[in-house]
Image 1: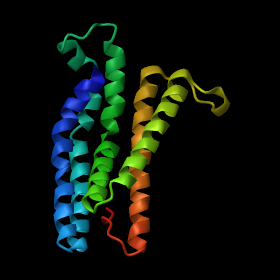
Image 2: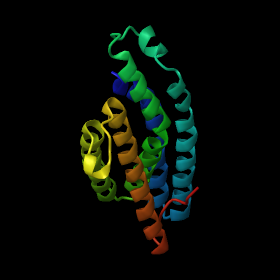
Image 3: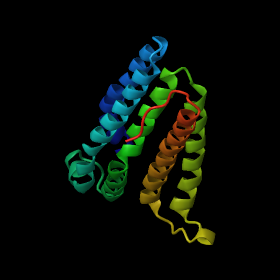
Image 4: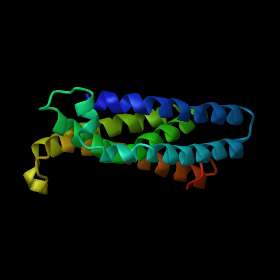
Length: 179
């Protein structure tokens, strides 16, 4: 339930951040890679600002779920999940902008491959964090583990896309600037 609720809030901002792809594609097509890169950078800044709007959700506790009439036995898990995911909103928005930038310059393969890797990582981390993994001293964390697995996998996705952008920039290829 909490994931659906959170994604409902994300939808507006993610849809708005998708505009980066449009502007990057327009300026790439017009032979203006520097302007395209500036739009990529502006998108990263906008993503960071938008993500800050979700942080207060982490401090609402059980109240929204009680108000929405969620079964009482689900409220603590939903509240925990929301807290972690709200704090971890920035990587979601930042990676979405990076993906849009890559698609805007005509590279649909890189963001797809990185997204698949991030999803596989998320599944592996889900198992490790929910059930625990004693060889690495990872305790079983239940629902909080699910949320942290998603936040970490999405952060890795954003970091990998950023590293690929950096490599492209050093090769003289278009890439968004960094913060």
